[in-house]
Image (cartoon, rainbow, N blue to C red; front, side, top):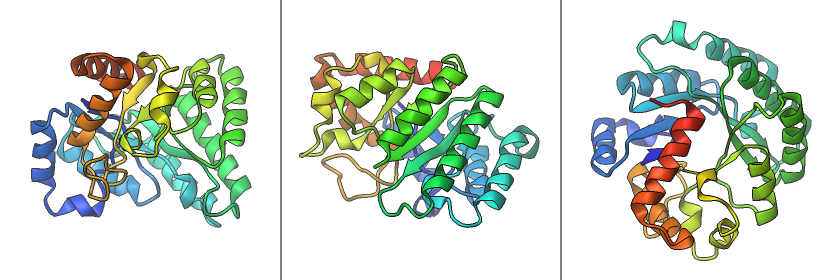
Length: 265
């Protein structure tokens, strides 16, 4: 299994990182992609990825919730790290994506316009560097679709990536897929009141990738605990029911999509 979105640089993993990594490998995890969220991530993400090159693969970006009054200064420093990553961190695997980036109006719309500016600039980085994007979208579907449609036209369909932690409607899912975006599926699929399983019945399996958002969003029966990549097995089990397909086929399909999208070797 490939976890396409895991914050394993989070401090909660730091004390026992070696044993945490071994548990994931023993649990059937082949690779973990580690997104950045802020300026601090320009240190913490490379830090863990340099320790486990090939198994942990880095991405960097500015999360919408981290867009505040000093966003220009912060974004400029992150941009410098993104564009000089291989030079700055020669012991790490190359960047696999720009992310985690996007729009989030859930708690506040104070920096709504700034979020859109930051998001657009990072989409431009992805196009310039020919990288996919890890997108976070919460309570911002209309603006997200508008911007992605614009960039889909602007890039002649070249811009692509993952809609992280997707839990939207069938109509929204199909809109993203039409623009070549993949859907990141994690613990939400196992939640009691989630409607995601019904939505996915209209979505082709090859448009899905697995993820955790660890240490957050642990699946049932571990909901409320610190999430781990190895628990993607519960998501695979649920996907097996939705698609009426063997679990190995689910893993093979999502791995194949992840490797193609992120150019993983």
